[in-house]
Image (cartoon, rainbow, N blue to C red; front, side, top):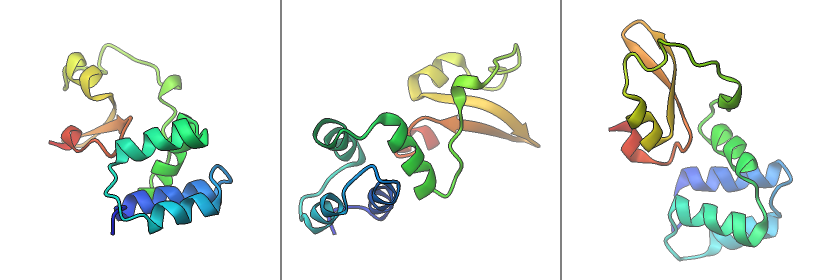
Length: 117
């Protein structure tokens, strides 16, 4: 299986949302080429015209999470109290809340595993 399970879910979601033809999804799934999330995203953007926003929504659905409209988030003096602003910028994350001792983060790319380390 060349396409990881979560990437398969993203492809299926894009087709369900009408952003990608089901024949294209089938072509990806039948391919024996190992493909990373970054490479798949690049192909979807360049060859199939899938927008970044459509990919964001499909990724959120694949992870069974709501998409977070970070553009509307209001920063305060407490936003970066527990995590360095440069780290957030480097990994494209945004601290959006706290739950007890846990910090709630909005992550631009849930496939970037280095963020979770």
